[in-house]
Image 1 (tube, one colour):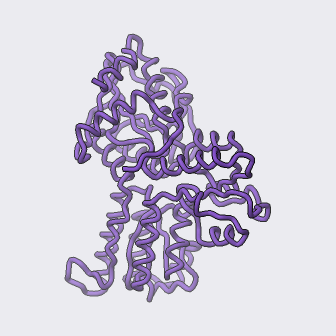
Image 2 (cartoon, rainbow, N blue to C red; image 1 turned 135 degrees about the vertical axis):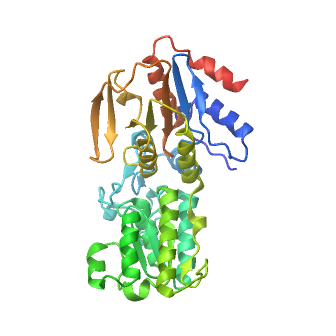
Image 3 (tube, rainbow, N blue to C red; image 1 turned 180 degrees about the vertical axis):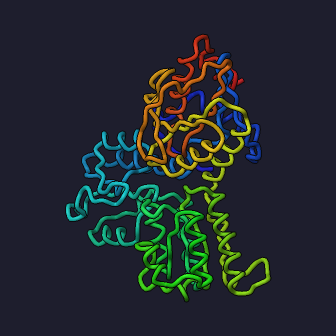
Length: 409
């Protein structure tokens, strides 16, 4: 696999040693059990897969190399490079300016751009419309495009099924950058629609079976369908693709459900109604799949609580939090600073969408058993810092250096 130049500040000696050892012992990635970090009175169970994925490392490599190779030039990013505050702040410190926020709100007008400027496309990609606008200004985007290859794979598959007259159903968060970009690429080939979860899939099923009127469709899915969308005609042949950071299991659940609805509507008895439903299972992101499977494997280990590390606006990280919350007390933190003391922790609440202070969060059990993972845009160094902070709360814990030796033997 291709390797990338990632700033050393994002690397971790401990995590690197652990990942190398697990990779050597499990080259086929069939073992999703966690790694035990035995600090004595503190046991940390680290998920098998977590942290920077291929797409994130590719984006970081291109972005930082672009800054180094173009001194004196004005460099812009369309929006956040990835959903990690440390990485985005590091780019800002190097003079990179952000044109939009994550919701698409303009921070710097496109009219300010000059042909000589550099504009980096983030890992989420961008819409065809914005790409065309940049090129109309004489800006060359090809060399500075950090779009994740797995996102581009979804675009390619969307185009392929659209050419065969299937409507593209996108499972994603409607306001997310990646979903907006995927919708743009899908819409170029034909009808497209964004749905956010299984509840909306079930609702869509009623329109597919023509149990609900088209007027209701336009109100319920306002702003999420292509111009001229006709629910009665455009829902006869469909294919489901995903925003790559969504729960892979939910995307598959949605696809299976809608396939059954199509079968029932069309009176198809075959298990593979290929004329009415496109097979898009190959659009699921391997890294999202691996990280989610690793959390499921980690949760088979009994723990007192879980710590999930990542940017608060990170979609893939929020889904890891959701998986953990179904089993035990879980805390979503951006880094070690949120772990204030053994008595207080600041963490993000997914339901209220705000950071909250919780007291009495750490139990006094010994050994203390904690489950730890992180999102795909979280540096390993941040995870190690969180582990170090946790270790400081448990007196008499072994040193991190002792564990590094253990994993490098």
